[in-house]
Length: 219
Image (cartoon, rainbow, N blue to C red; front, side, top):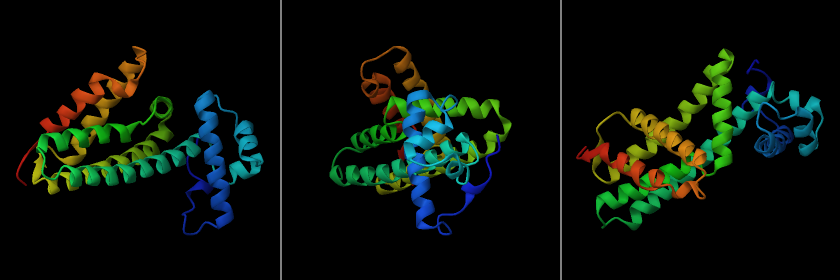
């Protein structure tokens, strides 16, 4: 499906009414996607939940995939901003403590920012599978993911600068590595039906240690 169209209108050019319409459609879509998955979500149900017609849907989004990408951008931008604030607070609280403990707490915060809940992870996994199958989805999906990774890399750089440390690999490679392992570990926790996925030993112990292993003292 095409992923270009009316939804590429920039926020600065968008009227307040149009922005509110998009917000309501996106909020409704998140609920429906969570219930049925992206592929099986009826556009009519999304419109009904949002209180709009199909015309309002298609004047803002060319497809459900484009709609999900818009949700992804908002979700990940908000997660990155929350992470930035949380990491800064963690560094301030532990300014006089051991660097390893600061890095471990920061590592846990990074993990939480990637997929705060199982539902969001499953939606991401479904969309990625669709993007792999549909060539026209690959570029926009990769671009959206890259922007999130770059935001995480920037947060990581700032954190290490404050600790007078540096990465042993380039920041984006570090983020891509941690994210890939995180997703593998979370998938394992889901398949193993662990009662609390966030408390998996892999997520709370192994991955923060990996982040520490990718850093060294000095700039």
